[in-house]
Image (cartoon, rainbow, N blue to C red; front, side):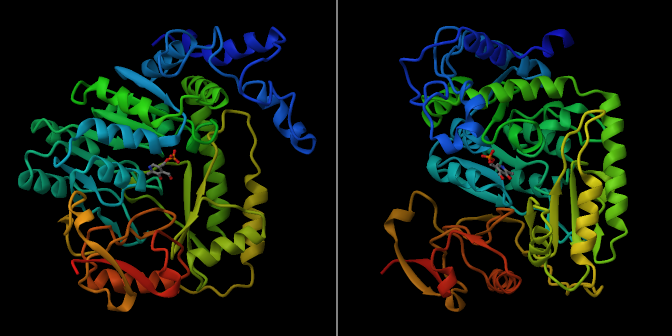
Length: 481
Ligand SMILES: Cc1ncc(COP(=O)(O)O)c(C=O)c1O
């Protein structure tokens, strides 16, 4: 790889060149390079709005790139050893939609890790495929779902050898990685393309101590939320194609359909810069970052009210730190306590709170000491006691929907009290959020143990997406009458 080239940021440079012309705008957007903007907010937006351009001469076109955007995407592909890479301006959400739609047709069987993001579920629904959900493993210490095991995947492929795609998430939201290589190799033996939602792993390409990047494992298509762990603007993401198993023309077609015809140049330029930042991330930076993280974790480990969790088999993302409550309160309550001390975290679940750390380069500072001090003060005085273990793992490893996406319109929906829903087929998807893992899937049977788990989540203060009448104790189910 040519490292000199990787230091460049062609799209950002093109925008700088454009700005240096002192342009007078008679085109969209209406803020006219930041000149027309509400006065009270101008000071915050003005600099950035100079980058919020449109498809002007020299600035290329995301939907038909042949200049600065093509150059920037080519550098991205080179960094990730991809055949082709794309900037996404609507998050990994749009990448997930496009990759699933490109890989499968109506009625095709698609194997999918159950604890996938809702964008994958939406993609399956739009594509009207027959999903087969693969249950992930469950970590009893962390009390969270991890990844799918090779055994589950092998059994699923044995049952559904004609599946048109396998969709997995790597790493999970908490940064836990797992043995994906064996899974990919097995799927490829059956010519099944492997689509990986690597939303949380864009930085893995920098090497150890981060887990191995999917780009190095032979997956066919990967999607990464650059904005989650790299210095990129929210919604900025990457999509990489590594093989011909998924039709690239179809994939591009769906990217055109799903993405705006007015993509944000500010987001795209930030992606260009984030790629350059990542490419220049070196061994010295890794050592510096690791030292900072270790010191922060050591400080947290001294706080008796929490436990800093270690990754099983050391396989996990060092940019994520998960703390578990040991003071009798739920993870949600722990998160609120930290917010009162101005510590804003990524997510909480009934037991844990997840912190996402910055990808610091050597010499960059971050207020870790202040944060550790604030956390200590916020929790001081809370009695140390383990929270009750109410962990749960479902019984089925491989499951299909009871009513498929294509047949759903033939059924009516009925709202019933949730305590009467055992054995019924859910007409809505209910996702405790974050981390966005569906508990009840639209079209799936509501089992008794899931219903009990739902009750425990309610008691521990979990929030839910979907299930509009859940707060009234009601859920929609399918009925033929
Ligand atoms: C695993 C996973 N995939 C996809 C997404 C969607 O990513 P984005 O917010 O970039 O659209 C998320 C968001 O949290 C996620 O956690």
